[in-house]
Image: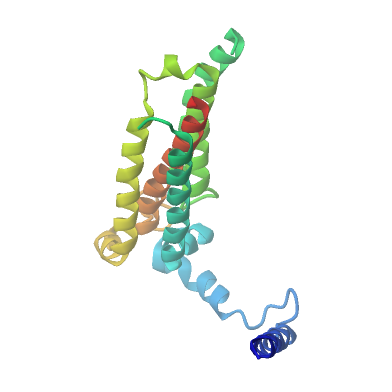
Length: 87
Length: 131
């Protein structure tokens, strides 16, 4: 019974993923990219930074960057705890 | 390491630091930013640590000082990102296109983020080499 339920859930999940792949826009198409177009049009005026990549990384998605830095800090703490013998 | 590597790394060290600081300060104007600037800054210190033995370099900068700096920089980065709206509101008047001091929040977080990345990498490599 458990196996049957797992197979059903996975099949449903796979069907959803397959449908979403079929609904993807064509590779390289310029349509359905509202977010990117918004960044390109308004990013310079809103953030004052000429580097659009930097304004996305540090302003529009700064919480994502905070998570990246957290990963880096946790990796550092782990390596220091593993490697160092004395404190 | 021999004397050639030691001398060339000692000569290269300030230039690597200047390049890293340039990447951090100019991150909102040209390609670069917090992460590459931090990696370049860390490269300079790692070069010195590898070229000299760590016993000779330890009176200049110790591992504990880098860990303390990393703590302060991480706290500052968390504060900058959490209070980003307030900082943007404060720095709104200084925002100007293509100006060095006109980056707003991006400018501040570039500097703090480069410090976090640099100190994290230096602490990793330093603690591995030391043992």
